[in-house]
Image (cartoon, rainbow, N blue to C red):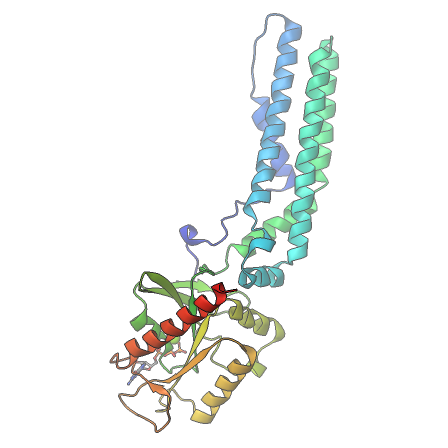
Length: 333
Ligand SMILES: Nc1nc2c(ncn2[C@@H]2O[C@H](COP(=O)(O)OP(=O)(O)OP(=O)(O)O)[C@@H](O)[C@H]2O)c(=O)[nH]1
Ligand SMILES: [Mg+2]
């Protein structure tokens, strides 16, 4: 429980090998090449050309995969770019990928030149020497980026653990003090069993559910342990990670429990709501009273029971209507 399944990884980046591992893989593969030509000179020439092409191809392809697989930060939803920036540093990722890309370009160039030289070399020992020299130069440009490869290997492992959400689906984030009924509510409004993923920089998990209304898909995110305690009890990193949720949330449902059976008094719950209102400015917050089946206060808040379902469909209807209106306004530039 709590781990992201392999088929459910947001950023599916292959394992990043070290410089030595890449070279090993390339040269080992190339060493297996055999060929028999008409003359001994032609045989040696063709084998060496094939070896060079093969090892350079392996390196260029392997490194190219990394460059392609890492998310390009500029195109990412700010939710993810912020998390990546916090976890590994956006700038460092970009620079490292740039270095890798440079290195693979150099490898291709060295190998191309060496192939040209070998093609016209007239002696077997020259050919061997040319190939050996090219291998040496290739090793050297790959090793030049070994720090960057090591860094990307670590970055890849961190980035893979990020929760899978669909940043482009309209998203409702559920907040409120512990035990007010958030999980019960998300279970009631979303169809499938929520997907659970660890949330970076906390020991907490978030769970993501979906529902549909009028052919549109909505995402509901439960944030146990995140939006349920006063913000001043958080360290700076945890707070920043929590606030990254504002890039995701199109609406927030803040659940209050006037029965206080959750263990939190109403003033505490109101205080948390105020903090969330301040920190998530601009995002509509629907504050609702849950557990109306046991206590109904005199307030004019919408009242629901996540347990019996009372008022829940009306709540969803209101949220969906507001979100639709917001989406329409957003497209009318
Ligand atoms: N009577 C009543 N009990 C409810 C209602 N909604 C939730 N509960 C109960 O309140 C308790 C907490 O519900 P959860 O859904 O786990 O609350 P939560 O906000 O997700 O709690 P955390 O994840 O610990 O923050 C459970 O015992 C629920 O059965 C409701 O509408 N009426
Ligand atoms: Mg819960």
